[in-house]
Length: 322
Length: 318
Image (cartoon, rainbow over all chains, first blue to last red):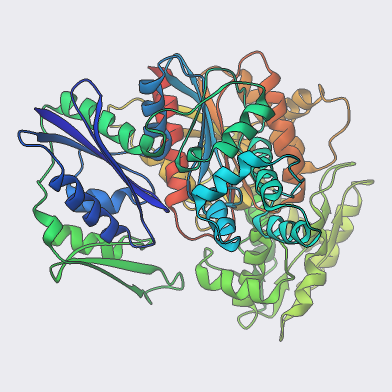
């Protein structure tokens, strides 16, 4: 059977999805990136290959997420796409008449408005990552809760407390003050969910025409506390799709299927590289006062790629050599 | 020969032909700092007050670069360039904030305030010129000659092209790919500084996107467009941004907007919201991408947004 592979390398998670010709998900995995994207990609691939049934033939690969270039270097992708497009494609595939997509990931949050399956407007958080998944992670850890326990607690709240959500540093000190006053942890956790939603709607969602059907996806959609807070704030039903945590990878796989259909062939080079040794190192280029941090990728001790320089002095040399 | 240093930052992008030609014609050697680099930003951040916007930090870096290389530094205090309109509080405070930098050369920091009376400008011109010449005639002549250069510079924009001094890359028209037209709204000192804008214009040119900016719309049109706002907008740039945005929204062929501003910009916090509000309430609604810049050097964030915006435009065109 011919299948397509999508990979989404994000700041917090690395997700892999396999789909068949009908865009049906036949395999998905969600792994923590933990600041080591190369290892996460390799581990994800090894796990995926070991659980892949016989007779499956990967004939197209798509990469997305902030680590998409890196992923593409390791697996040889047919399509390397930004997260917005990937998420929109996946959402429209899951709920064909979707109008609004709320997505909260590890460091990014975005809103996508679609019109007849085509993106008509979108926005992403600006310079600040307040109110994204990594903030919830951090606060759960501070309260000594796993993120699952955190979500469950939010549902028990009776009187959610008001917490300043504009900045994660302010939110943290506000939470501490509320704790010292004696509010229950569940009320504080629920208050935090509301603060995050308020912040999202006031920043990312500002001026956006949010109408039903509304999909909520991304890693944070696993948290029912946030889902309820969204439903209350918007007065709309919030749909969390089945594959909410791997929508980016699903979108990348769908885009790969389209690309291969268009080009008639794939760049996919097989998984031969996953047992190779990948090593990145960096140096500061002293060629001009920009002092760019140039990153080098070594595969089995051979230099394979360089990036990070503004003038392409270093990245060009390597491209010529290859 | 006296050397005058001009920082390549802030109002430089608006008035460079005027300033450089004025001083050159008066017999001075003009030294303009090179395009912004990371070292300038680092040094700028060191000397400037906290909580200031990125373009001002960079301005300080440029001053720092020039300070040992010149006899005079030209750092005007630009309060207002149009009747009852103001630039920005930070522009007004620049000469005062510069005292944080050690071993500064002599400053030429005239106050340019045209809120009330236009004739004041002549006094300022004579005051600045007196550093280099004793003849009021020569000073005024240098000024008038330099003004012609400024006019040419502005005319380039009004002819829907970028002045050659700005070195904006052109779209390769030989390609068969379709060209998409968009409007980019943002301060010229961000847009034309390749370091601050993370090469936005070049990135767009590579995608075959043709860019129209605020400077390409004439003042008359801008004033007409903003007359729909009940209250007079007294921030000079905010007025131009809003007027240009309303104009481009009605103009056929412009597919969308990119709004670029720096984190912590006071006037922009108002003008951006007003612009978005006006555009959303207009009969035709075109997509808007908001970009905010700060000290981030990783370009992944801005690339993702531009790429996604490009996909959006492409799919809308069909």
